[in-house]
Image (cartoon, rainbow, N blue to C red; front, side, top):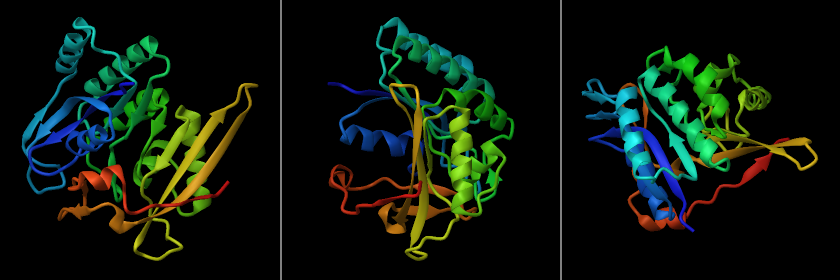
Length: 256
């Protein structure tokens, strides 16, 4: 059975971020991916200079209307990432709500790209839009530590803090929360990065349960490069086999 993803993220000429890093692995894993580029830049904004275009809300609406006119707007998943325009982000919310009305089982995965390492690399006026409009309609949210702190207003200094932040994010809407990277020390040493996840489940009787896990991720598991401004850029995995059958297996530890 075909699984189709609508991916609304950035595009860069040089490097691998946004749709350039997401589409190929998803296709290798068997997903059909329809991509809308929220921006088209020469390179990611961690470089000293970058040039390009930002898609407006009206332009996004035109693209989506074209898909609708051909009746090819049936999706199983929506994935969103980097954007720089508040009206564009609000239009994304409108599209997701419409798609969810057509398919109540649609899963919306939101990467709330706001910044990292204590600083924002998108306009600050995107923050309230994410917090008040985007996160509430998300099923899965994947912030880094800085973004999770920004969205909840709570700092993460300990694992207990991280659990509380994930619970706050659950309270905003998403049933699945993954803090993709944190500054917490790994029990396995400085060659490992700590990620945390939390899954909230609603049972048939209406009761709820939450399972939380911690993952110590080998830094070699994902090739990464830092610009001079220390902004993270995910590099494309070169081997198709590495995507289909990863050599590095990570184990999650249940923390509550």
